[in-house]
Length: 49
Image (tube, rainbow, N blue to C red):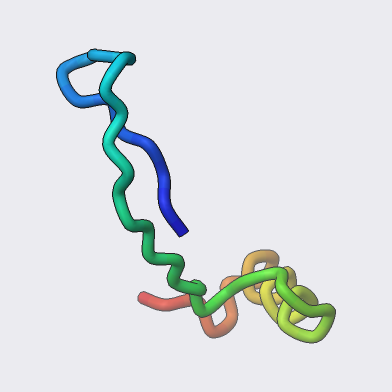
């Protein structure tokens, strides 16, 4: 995707920039991963050091 950047605060000349979306190891995109993420956050079991 893309997003707009207003360089130097000039709202009359927006610049389109490319956006890269990376999925984190812990996410809520599906039910199984969401449950695993909630377990990890609540118990810190498997939490990255």
